[in-house]
Length: 506
Image (cartoon, rainbow, N blue to C red; front, side, top):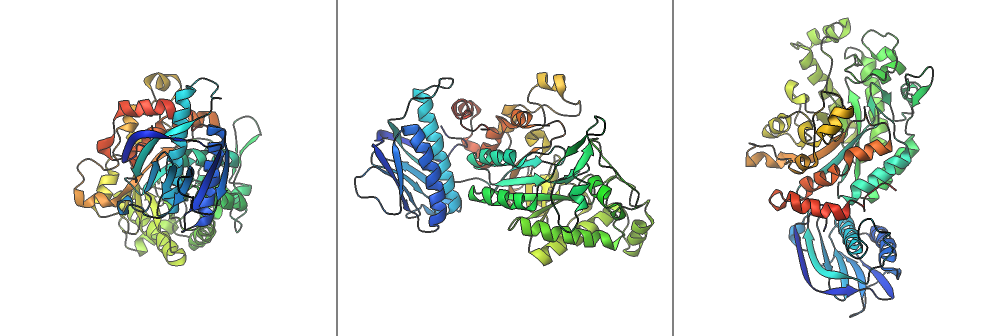
């Protein structure tokens, strides 16, 4: 019934019958404000599903009185920091968790159960107007397989309005994903307001859209970002910002050409190929700029690692620059790759020392080396396993399995996708295991989890975005939450048929 599939799900005889007035009791002592947030969402859903009056009460329920109870008491110890227990008996619906995360996920499972029951009496495709009389008795004990369960959105190639991001956060929260990796800068646009460098958004957020003199673009103000971070946090999602270095920076260099190797005037482009937007490693002002940007980013995204990109540096650019070439010789580094390691380590060390944050880099970093303090995000086959085997914490986002900008079928591929893209059907996504094949058990702990990535070169609007991620994101959510031995694609398809109508953009 539930996606992602719970660890234990036992159905029992009997039913919880909805009374005319249904109280939701807060017996959750750790964070009453947060339990009220969960209770309020549940109350709204219960009112719709059962057609009853629902009230929230700051008390324990009386014996034998039908009620919904949110509690942090008597939580099974083996459920871990994000686990929960959801129990439905003839007298009680009990959501039990030792953390805000667990309480929220218990609520999401209850919402799916409500939806499942409604589809039984008002099948998919009907007007859904029939109300529920009750819920079957069930006991669910659940916890996630991986601590890092993410979705990455590229807002640089195409800009998404704040309202669209908010709706997307709701979708991924319902699937119990807990990281929203936000790709905010690239050659095609700089999307984050940086107060100390206003030209980043005044110039770098805009490009010619290929239709005369009209401009395309946009950016997120710092106030909008703060509101989105707070909105996501209430839904147990950490927003992870990505600010690319040293490459993918044509938009930044169009705004501040003095940060490039040769200081020439640049223009933000809508071309998707690998560009030459690389910061000059030999200029002190490059690092002053990056340190100032990092200070504002760290303040906007409290508690999150900072993703530094680190991929696809165009070879030869630094060696053609007298400053970079001279720096490399002074540092006695043998090649450009060694200089990139020095560059990345320098910025990451500052972020750690000044802001107490770890840095993330794409898996290219494995080829030229990195400090153990980095989290590596493998995107090419073999990178995640190689990093984890070295004892480096790793996010496995291998493109063969989790790049949701790829077409879902051969027919789609032939119709409108570039030749270099692979075809990624639903069943293949469902078959993904974040633990790389052949990785020794002692290194499994370094696979933190995975992210499903959506690059948006060919995703210009919300309709296309949901076409790309649905229903494959359902499948992905199960790969990072549920034990691999519990997965069954036919069973998943049956659950999907019921639940896919629940999580749709409003």
